[in-house]
Length: 177
Length: 104
Image 1 (spheres, rainbow over the protein chains, first blue to last red):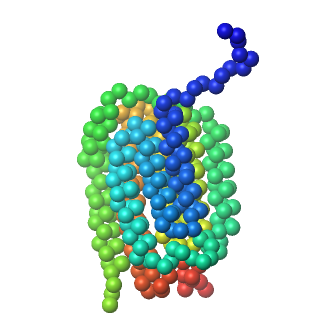
Image 2 (cartoon, rainbow over the protein chains, first blue to last red; image 1 turned 120 degrees about the vertical axis):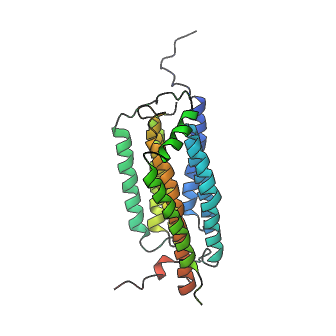
């Protein structure tokens, strides 16, 4: 077999291919959120981005977070946003642009932020592989243990926050007449 | 395994999209969607750094932070959409260019 004049790039592994497909889904969803003229298409793109993030968590072996993401974001938050879009109907088909008056400045700030983040990402030698996870059940058990031991005060505060937010949302959105 | 850089690039892109949606969209609901995108990008970074950190099976702080972020995001979006509906009921608009009564 003749020698190649250049070394072949290493073939992507299965998890890398899966990650790339999920990343394409998330990127397209994010672009739809930003660019779609119809607000409902933005909401559908947001669902795609949520699913993409859940897939990324599962590729990173954080399956519990991935399932929580699907339950909370795709199940609850997307439904809430779809209801809000329907309740403010007539607002989503503007004859004018979907962007506001300061969108030029916003675009400059966004591009600068992205450039800075990319420079940070490229400038630091990040690790290429984490330590292997042997027993994934230890993670779930550890999460449950942490929430009732060292994180119990934030956990209870979070429960109170959710209760207050629930009651507050009802009070704010209520028809006063 | 997937390099950590890939996670960071994806999260940076999602964060930038969310930032532009928050600052540049005209509809208040689209602004809330942008905030959700930014929180998701932060969560991807938390999970990625948890996975590539030291002893991911014992050191679960990244996952716990991500769960807290998810719960706070749920509370935030409920309040935000309630505010949007309240504003729509009073002003008959959710376009941010028209909501300028606090402008001096």
